[in-house]
Each structure stands twice: as C-alpha cells, then as structure tokens.
Image (cartoon, rainbow, N blue to C red; front, top):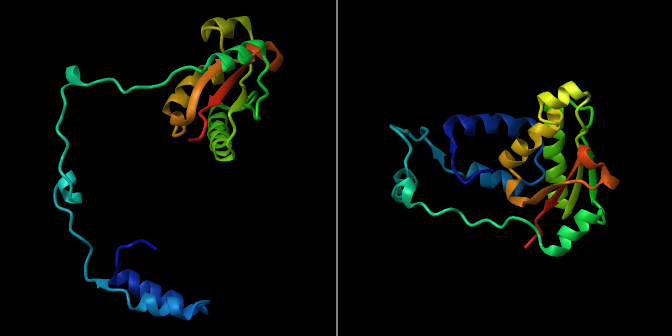
Length: 186
C-alpha cells in the first residue's frame, strides 16, 4: 500500500472488497479503516516541475561546458588473456540462434536480469551467423540478431551492469557468439 491516503472512491471500493473476504489480520483492518480519506485528488495545473516536488530546478549547463561522464571501459589484463585464449568458463549460456528479433530481445533481457540477480560474471550469448553470402554482405557480415545486439545492450536497463562485450573464442562459437562480462557487485 502506498503512503498516500485513499481517496473517497478508493475507500468505498476497499470497503466493498473487505466485506466479501474474511481478513487474516483484524488489526490491519482497523488500521485501514482509520486511514484519512482525501476528499478529492490533488489538482495538477500546468507542467510538473522540480518545485512541484519541493526541490529546486537544476540550472541548465550549455553543451560546450558539460563534462563527459567518467566510465570504465575494458577489463584487466587477466580477463583479456583468458578471453583471448578461450579459458573463460561462462556462468550461463543464452542461445538466441533461430529466435525472432522480438523473442530474442525479450530472452536477452530476462537472461541479463537473472544473471545479474544470481551474481554471474560471464554470459555466453549465441547469436548465430548470417545464413548466406548474400545476407552476410547486406548486413556487414552479421545476422539480424547479431546486428541488433549492441543497440539492445546499450539501451538496456541493465547497461550499467555490463563491463564489456567481446567476440567469443572459436571454442565457444567464434563469430556466431559473444561474451557479455558483467561488472562485479560492490
């Protein structure tokens, strides 16, 4: 339940609902009945600004005066050597080969979410190669999924958790696969 008080309509709806069920906790029922009722929703007139939330609006900084956000790219030498030699053992393998673009995107997003939650560091992402020479020339040597991966990862809600993306060693799929190395939890 949110911290805001219930509106009159919400409280009436809640009363109808609780009349049809047997509550597990009578104390909770008394606390809900004691909640203050807002007579009408808050009126929002005009654009919502920082002042609306009680803060002050940040000053606009001209583009030429903006400093780039510091980022850490790459991995240490140990990771680079292990990736180059194919010595990295992926924690999870995600096979997108044969998926449609939309199902591949959803599968990649859920795999990243689960891997981050599980604390994995290395993901082997199998994308597959382009089917024919003609298709390879049209797409710059890559299949449709492989072409879209970099955009998906850059725009992903998990982008801040990704340390780097590298081509896989031939042992793990070579040109048809990628390693996604996730940042260590702090």
